[in-house]
Length: 110
Image: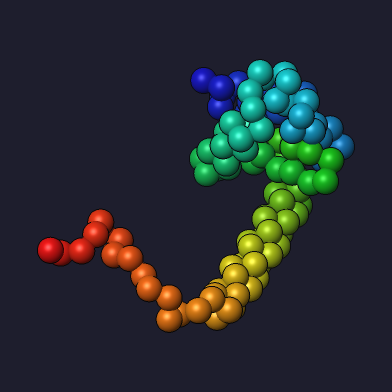
């Protein structure tokens, strides 16, 4: 229900990048948290609803270019997260592997 409400609201009042709305404004208008909003946007996008975003906020895409720019932004975020994971994996080498490790499934087998 909220998902459809968000899609209709964006399409009616925030159609195109020039009419973007901040997440804070959407949270207030729909009485939801930031996480709930992100989850709704993600669900709409998975269903093929062209909810786009840029530095100004969220909007219902008016053009193919707006969708493509949103995709590019999302890919850049994926690359950044991947680089962070790689760095964290490298950091694991700094931990002493000779430490005593406890069994994961609860205690010894006596």
